[in-house]
Length: 98
Image (tube, rainbow, N blue to C red; front, side, top):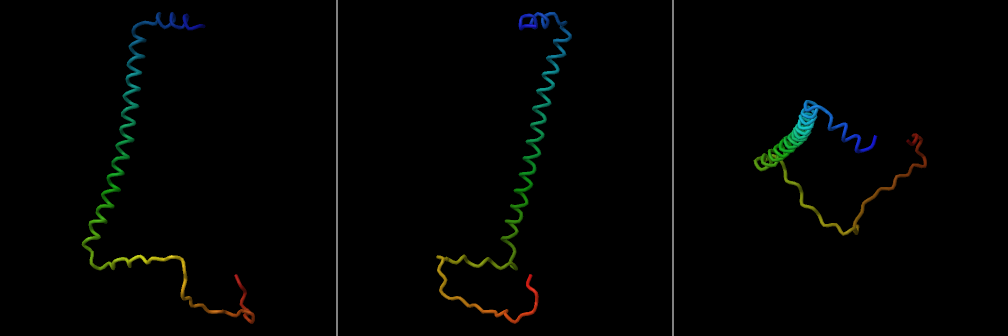
């Protein structure tokens, strides 16, 4: 069956079949749009809830006095100037090592 024969076959279909096909296509598009809207809506609600909880914790942190502030960060250039260490002699140790 070539393209011309296929178009002739489609042209012989009754109007009821054409109307059903068009309504089915419209219904499919509506369901696809609604499905996408539901997924986007759930994602938006989840994002808003996450941001609300973060904002609540951030605002409450202003009013809490019992929490000590974090110590200031130290500048470290990678050089060690003073180190304390201890040498452990295990030559006479009889406990098994892991």
